[in-house]
Length: 223
Image (cartoon, rainbow, N blue to C red; front, top):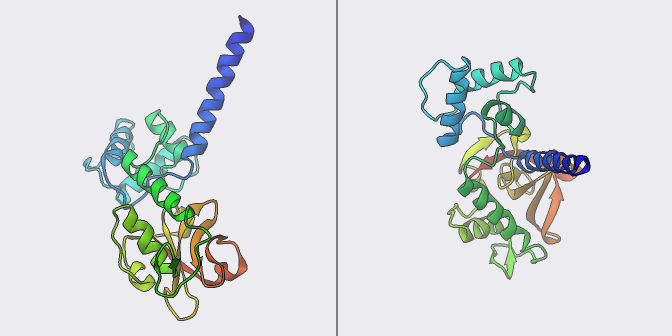
C-alpha cells in the first residue's frame, strides 16, 4: 500500500513537471488581450496588486502589477506571465492564450515542417518550390491566415516581438541580399526556425548560427 502511494505521488509530480515543460514557451505579455488577461487581472486584483479597471488588456499597468506579484513570490520579475507565474497566480497550468491559438500555432509549424526538403524557387508559392516569403505566405494561407506576399511587407504585419520573448509560430526576419527584411522564417522554439534557404530549400536552422545571428533584424507575431 505504501509503495502504491509513492507511485501515485511520483506520477502526479511527473505530470505536473510535464505540464509546466509543455507550457514553458507559452506566455502572456504587454500587448496581449482576451479572457485570459481578464482572469489574470482578476487574480492580481484579488491579491491587491492590480488597482485599475479590469478590461482584459495587458497594458503597462498590468505589467507593473505582474512584476510586483513576481517579486512577492520570488519569481523572475520581468512582467511576463509564463507558466510558473501563471501557476502561482491562477493556481492551474498555463495551456495558452486560448485553445484556438495554441492549436493554430501547432498547425502552422506542422505545415511548415512537412515541407522540409522542398527545393528553393525564386517567386515560388507552391509545394513544388518556395522562396522565403513564398513559404511563409503558403503555410499561413493553408491555416486561414492571409499575409502579404513579400518579406518586407510581411515584416509590417502583426505586432513587433522582442527576441527574448519569441514563441512558436512567430516570424523571424533577416537582412541578407539587400537592406531591410529580405529573408524570413517561422520560429519553432528552442532557437530554431524553418525557412526556405536559397542553397538548400526548405530546412531548419538555428538563430545562433553565425550567419543568421549577425543578420537577424526582428520578429513579428501574427497569431
